[in-house]
Length: 541
View 1: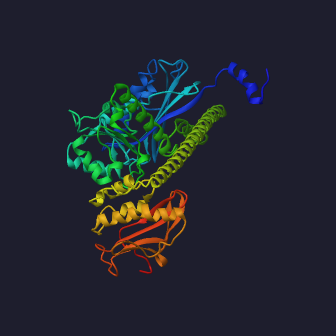
View 2: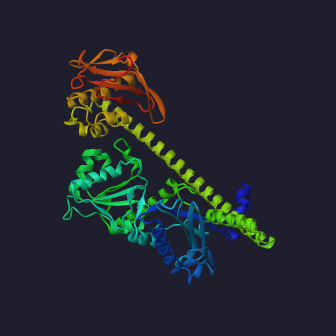
View 3: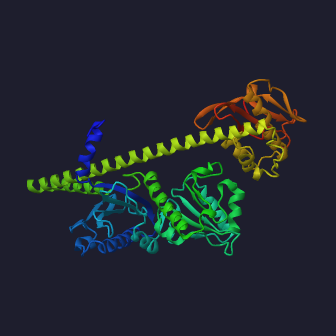
């Protein structure tokens, strides 16, 4: 038998070796516990966690645990450890518990919980980590928030940032509720994804979502907000964000943090209602959203800042004990034992840091692969669009003769995306400008963009002929920007808006004065509209 590489030669040997067990983090929760009395609130939350932990440890936790002090409980595969740090400026309690998987041999779940505050009057903070130790190469699971989180929400309440963590899905039942949902979606301080399940007005029950939102809300409590949006209120989102960023007809959408009216729709996962017609499809949708919420919790929280690892808390506790022993004159034996214990704790902390570093590298590699695939797909789609447009032109088929022009500015951006795709695109700045501009003639602005996407673009592709002072229609012409040219960023590149369409003669009345600032992007073979429809104010103007 011949091997072409050393790696291939090692494959048979590697298969015979025992598989290494590695620890993988599944989810994180960072929240604030509600309550008027921080000390009582923390005590109640600790009791909920201890009750939950004792049900999984296979026995009874020691009395030190219920006295909310540091403790150790050892059992085969069900070890539980607790740490308490109390000082003048901090009160911190942490627990780590192991629980063997009931169905998969060799798989062990670990839950880490930290509850505390840094000042007596500060609202107490809760951080949760769920990890799994396994020799499996691929861990296929359906993430679920630990049960004690629901108990804390029920007894005290939790906040993710300034937004309440709910026990059940939020029900939109009025126009005011829909407006509150809009505020939630575009809140720049929002930390968690919002999963919106819409009703379908074409069905007998237009107020009902397509999926089990109750299960989704319980599984992602503290990881995402779940909202039920009846069909009657889907129009509120469409009117405000545009149809391409909305959700309707029984669809489900994941609105990620940072979403607003200028967001790229494809960054916020949409599952169409037409694909949710079977029980299996609905279950897959819920499962995929649970995985998304869990993976996003790892990417959007900082370990050691938003979420405290148990190993770090334990190391800090042992360090404080060492300092206290040195001050109180403890024996050398006691100090040596503490030093050895701290060494073990630091080694455990280092091991976890390496595991997390490995997981971060994996996240990065997956993100690079997705980006490369998306870029390749976008490039292929662009080439295909250009090919189809060329074929239509060769067959003398008019691509713009049957275009219906928009009647209002609220439809303008979506109209561009649909009718001028592959030929002309609006930048985020242009999208913001066409929401509620003062310029009144929507159809004239649309006709100018059609001219840019057709005649202007075709002449750019041909590489010849001047378009300076070219008439677009009566009273409207195309001209170089001259001193009004300006630079702008577009998809990682720095471009210059060096041309504009202008109307209105010498008037500066924003109701009648039209300006469309744009440039030609030879790479994508598209017109890039940088701003419109108002005259852009500059130092020269």
